[in-house]
Image (cartoon, rainbow, N blue to C red):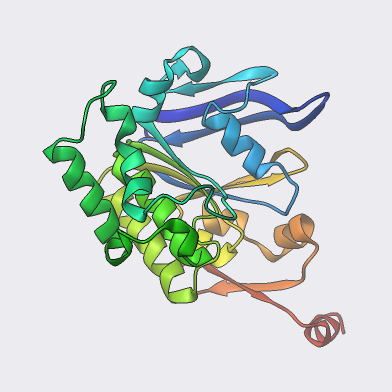
Length: 268
């Protein structure tokens, strides 16, 4: 695997006295698109927060470009790592452009105004996420899907070499889901970004990821290529769901949920 841009080594973390993530070891290679899957409550979002340096490790460590993330200045972390979190609603009545421009904050000195490069990065991020026509709209007036694309645009404007995304296709229709993942693939392939993406959609994760890590019960349950991880038996173990797995048009595993009748027929 390529040299790690981001690593978790025997990472344990959580909230209060109860660890949510326990002894997790994983790495995101330079130029890799890593998918993280797992059922609700398995610790995926908590893991993402720890990888971003926003949740302190109780044991183990997180390394960003080989250095402990907790020892790095926050501004340096923000130049190297962009995060798209799960956000349910806009917090304040900023315009879309103001939200996207926040991605440039790590590149500006105190009281420094935007320069030409900053403005170009903001415009480019809105173009890539198809949010340019919304630039002057207050984010409180946007739909959930529109706001999700604005949050992705903010991360793109940051121009960080590492991106962490927690359900970036949430609230999006099918067309925009595919366009967001196509964009991530382009940033990864042509822009050299190292991307870790948490996704509940197993087919999107299969189609776009170089590797998958499955999280269950706060630990790593499986790791490997999509073909190695996405088997019917493992999905049954992780999610308690009966599925069929075959090869999709992309040549990657395709997961189809079976109905009760199909499961019954398969057992005869």
